Length: 126
Image 1 (tube, one colour):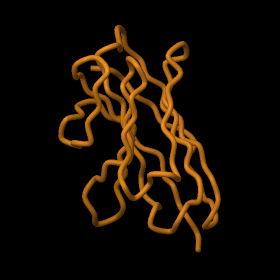
Image 2: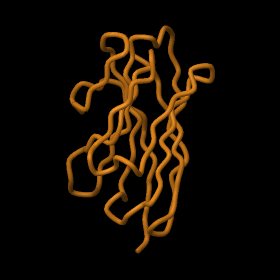
Image 3: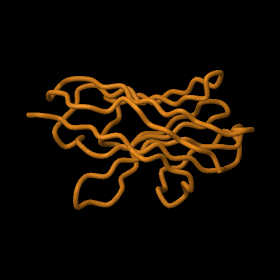
Image 4: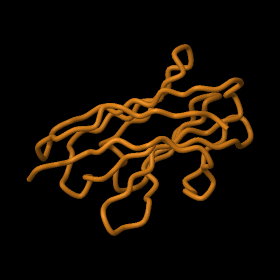
C-alpha cells in the first residue's frame, strides 16, 4: 500500500475552478492506478477520474468529462485534479485513492482501491 495526502480543496463559486493535489508516498508505483473519488453528505462514494501511473491512461466519470482533468507528475509523486466549470453538485469530500492493477490499466470501480487519503473538502456556492 501507499500513503496519500490530499490538498487544494476550498470554497469556490459556481463556474469557478480548483486544483486538487495528492502527494503519494511509496515505492515502485508502476503497477498503480490513481483515482479521485468523491462523497457528498448522505451519498455513497462516487468515482470521478483515474489515471494509470505507467503510461498515463485516464478515465472519467461522465458527469465530469470535459470539465475535470487528472494528471500525474511521476518525478514528484503527485497526482492532480484540475476542476473547471464547477457546479453545486460537485461539492463533496474528495479522496485520492490508489490500487494495484496491471501496468497501464485504469478502473472506475471504487471497491478496487485499497489505499485512501483523508480527503479534502470542496464547496461550491451557487
